Amino acid sequence: MFAIFLLVMVMTLGAQWYLRSTFGTWSKRANTAGITGAEVAQAILRRHGLDGDVSIEATKGQLSDHYDPMKRVVRLSEPIHGQRSVASMAVAAHEVGHALQHANAYAPLQWRSALLPVANIGSQIGPWLAIIGLSIGLSGMLQVGIVLFGAAVLFQLVTLPIEFDASNRALAQLQDMGLVTSGDSGGIRHVLNAAALTYVAAAAGSVLYLLYFIMASRR
Ligand SMILES: [Zn+2]
Image 1 (spheres, rainbow, N blue to C red):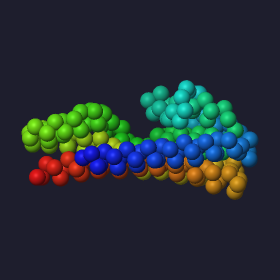
Image 2 (spheres, helix red, strand yellow):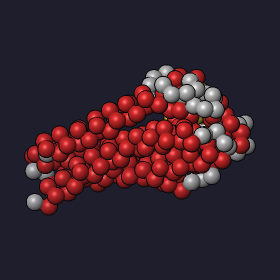
Image 3 (cartoon, rainbow, N blue to C red):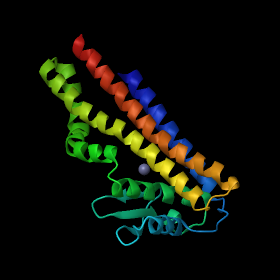
Image 4 (tube, helix red, strand yellow):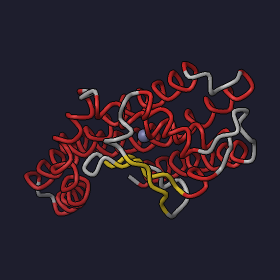
């Protein structure tokens, strides 16, 4: 268990470090089109006739960018919102990618929303039930923990195609609109891949824990 804990920690911290360093590099590089993240987001929304339905807001924090499907708001962290960098172009287009998924009723996004309530509970109490059940030898408790935590892991796995798809949409939009030059596209790919890697590392870590619990329950 301790070995898994160390491995997962190294994986997640490594992925986060890689994202920060990649992001750091490309947020210092101006994009050729000379437009801010907010302008990129606005242009893509307008192209799809969504500028009246989806709004764009600046939000505090670093890498806190996200799309809020309840309020239909693309929230961009202040540097992404205001800077004219390659990184801000990539992140803004990615978050609008989620708004496009929502507008097109992209199926994995709907599955993930359905999983959300049970995944929330599962991620909070599932591992604890499994660990306590394992240490005091209550196999019923361990199994309930496995099922709950399994829902949280499923949520993380469904997140992966959603993230990859949002990045593919981002790149396609930027290319179709002629906003990205060949000089920028390498950096945009780097930023999008680094962000995807953090989701892959988190999901892989959870799968490892889940497999450990399942193997322990069979012993
Ligand atoms: Zn995303």
